[in-house]
Amino acid sequence: MKFTNLTRAEEIGANCYLLEAGNSRILLDAGMHPRAAGSQATPDFSVLGGKGFDAMLLTHAHQDHVGCLPVAMRQAPGAPVFMTEATAAIADVMLHNSVNVMMRQREELGLPDYPLFSHREVERLTDEWRMVGLGSRFDLTGQRSSTGAVTCEFFDAGHILGSAGVLIRAEGKSVFYTGDVNFEDQTIMRAAKFPREGIDVLVMETTRGDSPVPEGFTRKAEEARFIAALQAALDEGAPVLVPVFALGKTQELLALLYESRRNGSLRGGFGLYVGGLGAKVTAATDRLRGSAPRRHGDLKLATCLPMEVVGGRDMAQLPVLPRTVYAVSSGMMTENTLSNMLAPRILADPKAHCMFVGYSDPESPAGRVRASAEGDEVVLDARRRPVERRCRVDQFTLSAHSTRAGLLDYAKQLQPKKILLVHGDPPAVSWFARELSRVCPQSEVVVPAPGQPVEL
Ligand SMILES: [Zn+2]
Ligand SMILES: [Zn+2]
Picture (tube, rainbow, N blue to C red):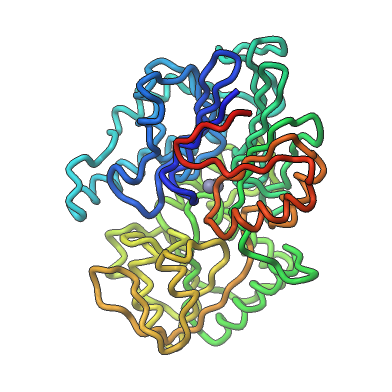
């Protein structure tokens, strides 16, 4: 068995991995780099050596896992792509949106290769997608099977709607790839339900390896701290920017605002703006309620609170109003997204607040705002002048990713023979490598270098 990393660097970029097992080649995820552009934004498919693959497994529909799916599928025409029903519904929305974004970037960034795929190609390729349920074991043709040369099984990852970790059994061994995971309940998502024994090789994400949480931290207490800060800001009449990912964080935030209104911890009326893609994913989430595990199973998020939907074209005219929450993407304030377009006016306003609720890449505009002090000049977009930050900035840990302690506990319980560390910046990966050698002394810990096969 062999595992090869197709990302171009050791980072959370365009996640994509090749597993060679039982005479088959299986591709795991095919993301697009959230910061890079052009060919540098794709996984390095040259590692496949023109030999394609037999099947693909998709863990969830975030851009860094699904963004290059059509490009990956071109490497192996007709190969089935397995995913959960919710991932398929959301991936469809995300990929069509991505075509629109790339068409804009083609002009703005002068990228003649863009879009990397078309709306028509996305429509055609969805025919090769195979929906599979959680906890059902299937072979690479999609037949239910517990005896095939290679079998696969999805487990609820608790990260976003549809997210799954995947267990591959072949050659008498079991390999478990976590994808992105959360072991704690969020406002909507329930905690992951992962296998607790019998894993030989664990391939795990390391996103938060460099982000310790304070002693006694709980999600519930952090939600309460966020709502109290939001209430105080709204009471002062502040406009509040909450940069969120369209998929996952937008829906979690809507549910949290709804829950807080109901239990009285958030009082009084307030304006609420949600981004266009966030609203589309929210509608898909509402359609899927009941078919994927979550809390607030009956809640329709799109109508649980009065809200306005805004798109990129409205942004220049969008009023920055008192007592109003702007829950717009992206969470990292990436250039040309709604949160980046709104940020100059929020940053320059001493009455405004900017509240971060999840992970940001330190190199992203959100990372720079978070690291800034009041009065600092912040670069939001390299093509424009920096903006003096006069607004208040608060940070909350309402991450959709497991704490590093949670992942360490999981590995400790499993005691696999090998642990492969992926999906993390170098300091995060180093922390896990160090700590795992302490808590899992029997396990061999490997950081798969891009393009270098690891024998399992
Ligand atoms: Zn994710
Ligand atoms: Zn990810």
